[in-house]
Length: 162
Image (cartoon, rainbow, N blue to C red; front, side, top):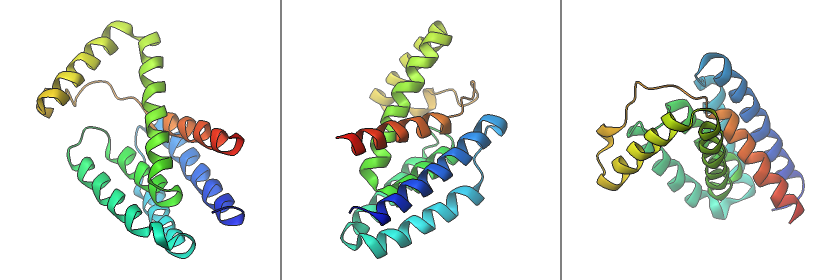
């Protein structure tokens, strides 16, 4: 898909991500009033412009919802990734979230090396043992939406240039 539909999807995603990043930085939450309309609009746009990819998008949204029930990250962050999935497709959302994760680990290692290393060790132990109770959910809160925005910008610039 090229042209106007792609421009509309990317612009909408950038607006949603920017608004969410600002809200996440200020209040440490992303409101449903931002994410739910974006998810709805994304599904509608996918049905209109990329009907063949609608089943994959719906399956990805269901998997993200299930992932969200594990509460390994904030629910607003999960819904934001769902919105990005609906608007731009599962690949764009996955790549953007992956870049965001790399950014957040790198920056947190620079800012708080000991705490981040200990948290990473605990997270790896929890993932390898599938014992998610090991993860301290009362720890420090880091706004993830700005990193998702940065990851999406990197992914979009790469996609446009190459």
